[in-house]
Each structure stands twice: as structure tokens, then as C-alpha cells.
Length: 118
Length: 118
Image 1 (tube, helix red, strand yellow):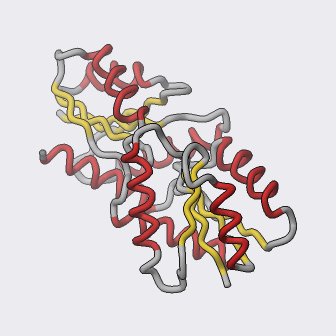
Image 2 (tube, one colour):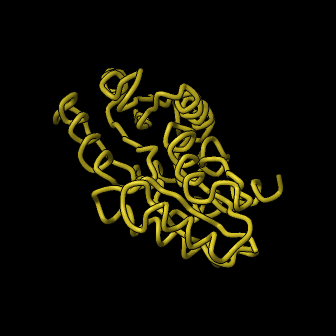
């Protein structure tokens, strides 16, 4: 089976983690998604924990960065940690960061409108 | 008039900035958006430059964080910088981070599907 591994930066503000976990729960309602494993670069569960759990249960790991764009965390840090944990023992696929997806443009516009209307 | 001020973290990877600037351009095509001022916490143009330009042209500044969630950058750093530059000389409105907006859940799901299909 295929694992959805959602990796986020993390923050000292616990609200950050709450939001990531809520998004992960909602992703589990999507078609073709069985379980979403969550890992934080800074925080718990760690990215290592998420990868280990996913690798114990699934054959293909899809690493989805919950990051704005391909900065050094996405391009280097996440990949290095994944390779440290699973090496070439599993098939690993890397998804793109949120980036310039049309829905991101729309989300920022909606956040702007909400703020203007308040 | 109302200024759309898009604030992003920035990265050593120039692709990060490119994506933010592309998103800003696309936001300028939206109804009720005249111009999007972009500022980076780490990088150029700085958040100070973006706020100064917006304040020179507009009466109301809508600060839209291009961040995943309300971590310390959004809750503290951005607000401190905005207050340093404009104080109470302008009306400032703060939009929410991307967070758990339904379109974010959908974007992450699309990024997952793209990666699985590759």
C-alpha cells in the first residue's frame, strides 16, 4: 500500500501543530488515502517517527511537504532525513510543495477578503 | 485605497522567491486587488520596503502572511516589523495564515496525487 507522509516545519506555537494535525485528519477522508503519517522537522512526532511508522506498514512512501515552496528544508533537510531512515529499502516519491498551485493563489485571496471584511 | 501586502519567509533557494513573486502577480488579476506588495523576512525586497511602499500609496494595509500557520514569524515577527514601520499612522489589518483552509487540504491532496501518478 501507499503511505501519505505529511511533513511540516513545526513551531514553538502549539497552534501550528494543531493545524497540521487537523489538515492530516481531513486528508484521511480523501479517496485513495488510507492513513496520513505526520512528522515535524522541529517537534513531535518527528519526521523520523513518521517515516519509520509509514515504512513499517506500507511499501511506497509519498512524502508531501506542508511547506510554502522548495526552500532548503524541502530540498535538503527532508530528503536527508528520509534517506537516513529508509535508505533504498522502500520506494519513496516526493511531492511538490504548495508553491504556485492555483488553489494557493485562491486561498491567499480568500484570506485577504476575510481580513478586509472584518 | 487598500494595499495587499504579501509577506513570505524567504529562502537561500532563489526558486522560493520566484514562486512568491509569481503568486503575487497572479493575485493582481483578482477582483478588488490593485497591486500586491511583496516583502520577505529573509531576503529582498524586505518586509520594511514592502510596508513603506504600501503605506506611501494606500490608506489601509492588509498584511497577508504567505505562511503555513500561525507560528512565531506570523504572530510576533511580522507584527513587530509592521508596527516599527507604520506605528499607528495607518490602518493595518492582519489576514490569517493559510492554515486549515479547505483549499489547502485540497492542494496537499493534489500534490500527493501528482506524485503518485508520476
